[in-house]
Length: 88
Image (cartoon, rainbow, N blue to C red; front, side, top):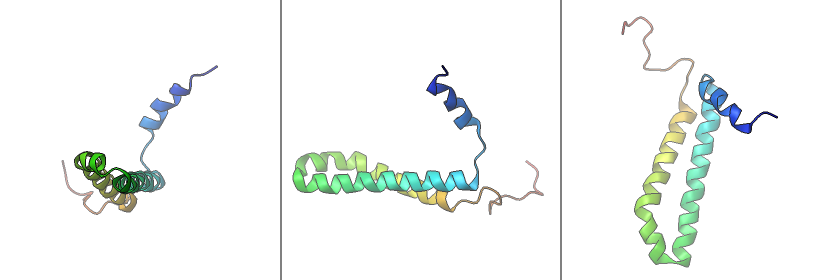
């Protein structure tokens, strides 16, 4: 029986497509929004622990939303900053 962990190298080596990028971006934004909503709910129930978690959780949620928006809007097939005539 094959191990479920055998799939991970295939996931890491597949090329990034526009559809994969958008799904990944949406997933990051959803996870970040859920973390921020959890923090707001936690702020109402126990403000002290929520305030202690804020310096870690809120920047991570903001970074996740920013990365999600970037991945969702990125065009992998025709990037705006790529000049095919330029030499490396």
